[in-house]
Length: 269
Image (cartoon, rainbow, N blue to C red):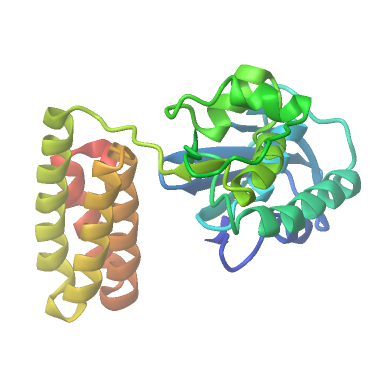
């Protein structure tokens, strides 16, 4: 049986412990906004993980600091390779330590997808002293690269980049901004139209009683599309509509809703 929930309610280290104590084999899929990561367990032990370009231990540590998003565990799915050899205990201890550190870092750096940029200090005349790691980072700050991008360029983890930047942000040497990664206007327009048609179907099958909920998820999808999440934003909206239909109208109506949406765009269902 699949096991799923919200990362906001249950941190990843706790989720892994719940499943690993039973010795299960299977695959965790974690998603937030446009990102998706995977963790495979074999007989309760983590054996492979991947998120973006990170694999193995670093992928575990990167996923451990996600404080929002969804997770789902599908039993019996096995990976085609092994990238983790450390025990769950060692991995989860380090993941928990990083999660504690990230709670502090996130007060200044909300995500590794934010973009650092140097601040102009026109009215300040004090001498600025940087250590070698900070100088190394400054050479990669261009106002376009995200923290994750800088980590890839320097071959270090995004977490370590965030730790170095934290002091620079606190000292007002660096500011961070949201990364803009938009699709083409034509692509966005098509996705907005698709989202609107799916919303109309949801209103038809779920009813007026869920109008506010439907509108909330539709507006969230529009924001995701315009922020660069693209098709994933639409997919997440569809999932929310299906959850609402199941809760309010039952399985039969949910299947009808899913069928109608699949007629518009099969992958969206």
